[in-house]
Amino acid sequence: MRLAILLFSSIFLAGCAWFLEPGVVPDRAVPADEVAAPVETPAEASATGEGAMCGGIAAFQCDDGLTCIFEDGACHSIADAAGVCRKTGPICTKEYRPVCGCDGKTYGNRCEAYAEGVSVAYPGKCEVKES
Image (cartoon, rainbow, N blue to C red; front, side, top):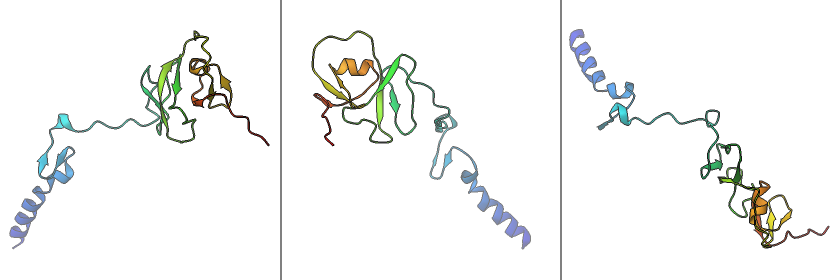
C-alpha cells in the first residue's frame, strides 16, 4: 500500500513540475530564449539619449546636453508625466511668439524656453496673478 501511495504521489508531483521550473507555463511550454528579461529598476535605469522618454514614474534622466521637455501644459503637475529628451541649442530665432514657461516666466518663443530647460505651460504671455 505504501508503495502504491509513493508511486501515485511521485506521478502526481511530476505533473506539477511546471510550477517549479522558471519559463514553463501550464498548457504552454515557453522556450528559455523567450522568457522575459528582468525589468530594469529605476536605480539601474541610465540616462537616455535624444528623442528618448524621460521623467515618468521611473524618473529617467536625459544625457548631458539634453533637456526633458514635457507636453505643453503638463508643467510637472502630474507626478509621473513623461517627456522627451531634446537637444536645446543656444541658437533660437528672434521670432516673437510669446509662451508662458512652466516656471511662470514669459519667453519670446518656444525655442527660448526650451533653451533654458523650461517646458511650455501655454502659448502667450504669462498671466499676472493679482493678489
